Image 1 (cartoon, rainbow, N blue to C red):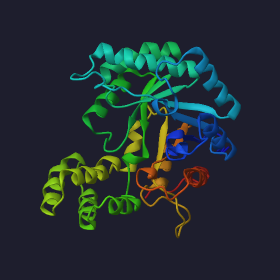
Image 2 (cartoon, rainbow, N blue to C red):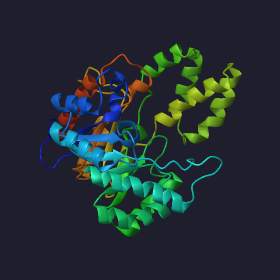
Image 3 (spheres, helix red, strand yellow):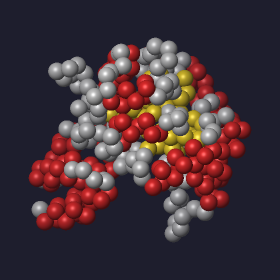
Amino acid sequence: MTDTAPGLPQLGTTLFSLTLEQRAPGNDLAALLRKVATRELGPGVEMVAFQSLRGWPRLDDAAVRKVRGLIADSGLTPSCLAINLDLALQPGRLLSDDEAYEYVAVQLRGAASLGFPAVRVGVECGPEIMTRLLPLAEQLGVKIGVEIHAPLTIDAPPVAALKELFTRLDTEWLGFIPDFSASMRAVPAAVDDAHRKAGIAPELTALTRQLWAQPGPTMAKFPQLEQRAAELGAGQAEIGNLKMIFTMHGRMEPERWADFFPHVIHVHGKFYGVFDGPDGPSDPSIDYPAIVRVLREQGYTGFISSEYEAHAYTGLYSAFDQVRAQHDMLKRLLEAEPAVAR
């Protein structure tokens, strides 16, 4: 396992990284857990419940025993279970607050039965639902973390409202799960290849990259992208694909991660590829040293779940090898002497 020094964040893997690998024959849950363990990509293991657990969110006792046994046999440590609130679950309407609460509560109980100490929810679990879930989280001993994924920032109104709630309640059971995708310094190079394969003209990709790099809120750039892309001949399907550059790759300054503390309960180590460079292995799209510096300064000792998501663009690289490369890089950065502030 990739053990870090005492007092530092712990490393782990989310099985979401292995989205392409799990489609290969024989790669069921037991096999994936075994491979994560034998390749020393723990000690933490995170799952996306609806992806990894057949029958979720209502597992019978036999299924619960089986999953707990598989994790125990692997020697891995359950770190987080990603659950979902699908507000559009019912055709033609959104779930009521009571229905939303019950939908998450069932999954929270399921996470507790499986031995996970934390769950990930989306920002659609706003202050009212989170407040209602708090007594149950305390009772079950399971923390609830709201994922801050691109294009969200600490200043986004729904995130700011949650920050105010967490500060006011001052509880260890509710908090944030910031994702590295919220703070990216470049669009991954694999995007170009994916767009070419999809038949998107290079000038459209270049335009979107240019707009992405400009200052300003991500969502505010959509109208300009739509207008200028249409002028270059893009159809609605292509424009929708181009918008993914904005929604998957955030521009929040890494230093703003400090504002999530002390309410961080887990971290998603999103990445799009670690490759050799002049200063050693790195992911050109994410400023790891800056984010790691904040985690160290804030005394974070929880898990970082490596989340390889280049499979959204390319299948050229082994996710197992990529997570290994990220673990080695993170361990080196975490155990290095604190960098001098620039």
